[in-house]
Length: 197
Ligand code: SAH
Ligand code: MG
Image (cartoon, rainbow, N blue to C red; front, side):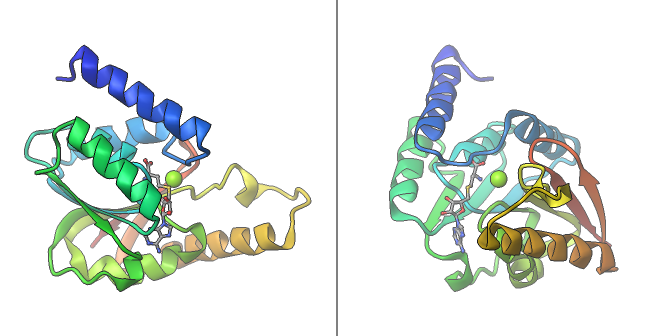
């Protein structure tokens, strides 16, 4: 499906992300996400946290009738994402929004909401956008292990401790939320999959 040009372009994005410390999804994580989208025939996706468009492009390439809305608050990253999406000629299927997700109001309904933004805010993203989820569909969250720190006793700065605490709270929130069934996957940086009952 992807020609040599496309493969090269993806490698360039990966390289750019590495050089500029942009936390795009890890290889295993993105592979898991792509397989999930295929297996569950997901067509409408909302992504919170575009960065430079890497995961959005990878998801859009799964199938020609997938449509994505992706939100990024950082101007520079958004501009880079627009550039990348255009290079893949995916601008008709990936709609990029340069705003803080908390300021975005959507009426669309999605088959998948992919939360990959500020890690301390996952509960808030979840509760803000769950009204946009179709029944029996999915909310997936990345970085649920946060570099393994969620299950470690390492010495950490105060800020980092607080962040880890918030991720743990999110995990508890998911476990206790009986409107969804959530499974946790030790893949990439840790991924949770919540299915709406
Ligand atoms: N999904 C991307 C990586 C996203 S990195 C990929 O795998 O390719 C997380 C991004 O979320 C950062 O670029 C950050 O600027 C953005 N972000 C964090 N909080 C946000 C918010 N409240 N609204 C919109 N974007 C946010
Ligand atoms: Mg991530």
